[in-house]
Each structure stands twice: as structure tokens, then as C-alpha cells.
Length: 153
Image (cartoon, rainbow, N blue to C red; front, side, top):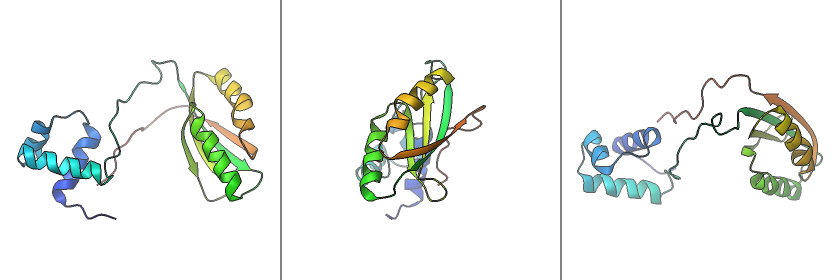
């Protein structure tokens, strides 16, 4: 892991909370010149510590109100089955996140759809058709308590 100093941590903390902050305001908040701040920010981007910037959208206002976590158990645990499943999961727009996990199942998916009827369509029409899927367990989210939390630096 790359060494980052206190100033880099300050920049990263501010950027993950306020990605649209201007370089001038960022420089003022961390106590560096705008040029030095810009150079550090460029380095953090180049080195891959900052992976991108984007807007956080309200899924409920966009008609995607149901958040569902899905445990997926594959029929075989071989590299080719893992690769095919992962590639297919990346292509499914309903899948927000896909994590290979250790334990009683192989993958944990975070999905978002309009409602339970849309999830049923996704389950039958997409998820159960993904390569190697033997079994799924669905967990519909009743309340989102904390989302998009910043990393503790």
C-alpha cells in the first residue's frame, strides 16, 4: 500500500464527502497553495487512491425503490464458473454490487429494482439464468439506515 501523509488524508476525507469542491476551496481548507493542492489531488488520482467522481442519485425518486440483497450459491466452484458468473453479473444493470464471499454461499449481490414484481422478473428472467447459479436467497430491505458512508481515514 502506498504511504499517504496527513495532508493526503485530509484531501481524501474532504473529496469523498464533497466531490464537487473547487481546488481553491480545498486548498484553503487544508492550508496549502492551490498549486500544491492540485498537484496532490492529481497524484492521488494517478495513483488510484481516488477512483472517480459521481453524483449520488435518489433511487426512490427515480422509481427504483426496492433494494434487495441476494445470496448466490453456484453449482460448481471452478475458475471458469466464477469468471462466467462475474462477467454476467457485471452486465446486469439491476446489480449494483457483486461480491465473492467466503462462507455458506459464493456471491452476495446488491440489487435495486422498482418493486417486488420487478424483482420477481429480474430473479426469473436474469438472475436464475446466470451461469452456474444453483440456489439464491433473497433479502428485501425494509429500511435503509446508512448508505454511502465515507471510508474512515
